[in-house]
Length: 340
Image (cartoon, rainbow, N blue to C red; front, top):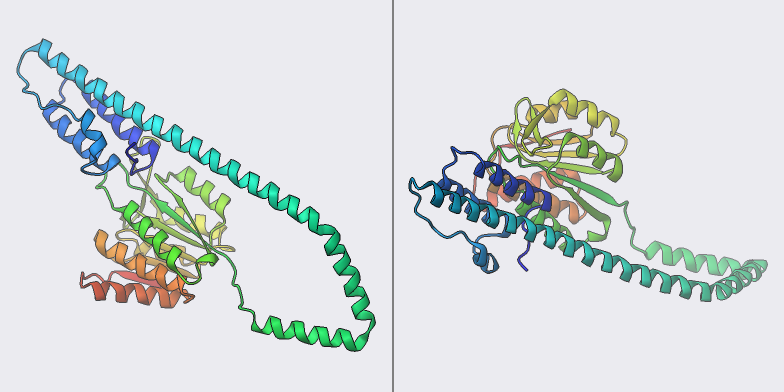
């Protein structure tokens, strides 16, 4: 079964939009076929072998109304077949997830059983400890030993939760957000302090899902990747189209979460004005002075999180992100700006 490369709901929205186009009498079927090919490449990835069995056949469209309706029927059946395929794929993934949860539940119950078996031994240890402290000299020796061990133990820092917010409205140019988050995940998995980080991602972000994610996750670092304008960032509405969230609204939002959030990273074009508004409430905010190419944005974020994963602070991580752009020789290292 071919894997879905974008979120399930986004894939369904794209194909349902093509069904609507098909019902429009003025739609050019040849152009629609090309758009469908582009959509399928974005959903399943270009060159997917298992998708060839449902690829549309090239047809010659004339003025024959009967032939035209046959072609439309073929299109409709094919698009619906893709939608059914994606829904089936989603259901199977859910079933796999449920099986995984059952496995973890079984392991938990086994650990709980082992712990209950250890309780008597643990209680005996408590009694031994009380006896030990009855003899001052012995107790003092034991305390000194424990202190030596604690001094040698590595310090474990607080958990850093990263909330990655992605939005690529269907009426805007498509961005390589999925590639960016994959690189971030890969870098954190290889990091020396990987156990300190939790990465949560929210796709096709709307104003409502943004608020809910902030409430649910209580993040330390918030990153938004998507389209931006001088007046705000572009989230999605219920139909997947662009919805601008202005600078003032962003500032008010992050003011409410200033006790948890330490850094906001706006990996979107012309986000300096938003960054300055948010920086009134958040210690560190990174924005972009101008339009930023995908390659530059992704390279910067890779360097930024690599530094954090190595235990460096936010200022150092920002500088390493800039150096990463220079090392790649792609230009644009003057675009990211940090306020704070």
